[in-house]
Each structure stands twice: as structure tokens, then as C-alpha cells.
Image 1 (spheres, rainbow, N blue to C red):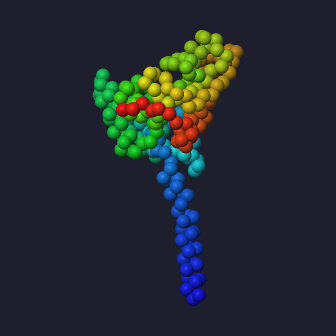
Image 2: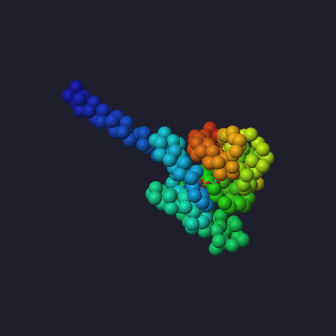
Image 3: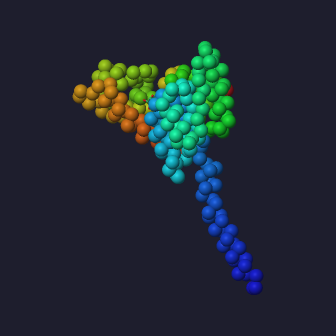
Length: 229
Ligand code: GRF
């Protein structure tokens, strides 16, 4: 009997420790490590960084990579304290795969689970796409499969569509292709210009990408048959 209170205290202490330690351990163990790849202003990158600050968000942005030294998003990422890498594609010339091997090495060094392309203006080779199949997302400013490629807002206006929007998809071998994870739309309004429509779509993008990444990071959206290396 004499030892009982001590035991109880020890148990209570142990439980208290477990309670204190466990949530952060779980969080650390299960959060997916994400790299965001940019070439420009990086507003979608910022939206992802902001969303990932929430404690219950299943992913953390641990790396931002730019292929352009002048990408304004790169400076913004540096200010946040997130690790950044500049991998300039130009010294690699025509050798896209050599550039991607450097990129892949940076992703490996940071133990990346998921890659998010966010205004990353490089066509990717089948090697890289296959390597990251099912683990790489892209955001496109149109309701895919409509308006693949550039100048989507101008083309949407020219086509006279009444709805336009954004898509997050797993990256497939063809440009702006691959299974869709999430889409959202906005109305095209009378008198819209390319700029006003782009701005309306961008607001949607900033909500959509964090939602889509959450689905993938939680394993609620998966690619059933990822391409095999
Ligand atoms: C976004 O419209 C995105 O959908 C497209 O490129 C643009 C990048 O903008 N892929 P930002 O750099 O995220 O501000």
C-alpha cells in the first residue's frame, strides 16, 4: 500500500507526458511534406503556405523551388523562412532531364512526399512525370479539359463561355492533362476583360488548391494506377 501513491503519481506523470507529447508527434509523423514549384509571382504558393499553417492541415510546405531567379514568389517564400531552392533551367540548355535530375535531387534532399506545381512554366519529361506519378499536382486556370495551355482567360472570352474556372489535377504525361482532383467555377460576366476574369478565377484558385492538396495529403484522392517507372 505504501508504494501505491508513488506509483499513481508516476502513472499520472506518464499519462501527462503522453498527452503532451502525443499530438505533436502524430502531427509530425503524418503531415505530408510538400514542395511548391514556381516560376513567377507565386500567389498560389502563398495560398498553400497560408492554409498549411492550420494545425489540422495534413500537409506542410517545406520547400519552394523556382526555375527563375527573378520569380517574385521566391523572395516571398524566403521571407516566410521556408527553405527555397533556385534551380535555373538555363545552364541545362536543351537537356530537360538533366534539369529535372537536379530538381529531383532537391526534392529527395528535403524528403518530399507531394509536389505542387503552381505557375511552374516548364514542360516536364515523361521521366519526371512517371517518377512523381500520383504525387504531383498542378493548378490550371480553366475548367479542364477546356482551354489547355496559355491565355485561358482570353480564350474563354473569345469562345463566349458563360462559366470559367480552375482545375487541380494529378500531372499526366501530356500538358495540362491527368485525372482531376477538384474544380471550381465562376460566372463570366457582361463586360469582363481578360484581367477582370483572371482576377475572379485567381480568387477561386486560392481556395481550390489548398482544398485539393488536403484531399490528396489525406489519401482521400489518390491515383488508382500511377504510371510505373
Ligand atoms: C495561375 O493562374 C495558375 O493557375 C497557373 O499559373 C498562374 C500562376 O499564378 N498555372 P501564381 O504564380 O500562383 O500567382
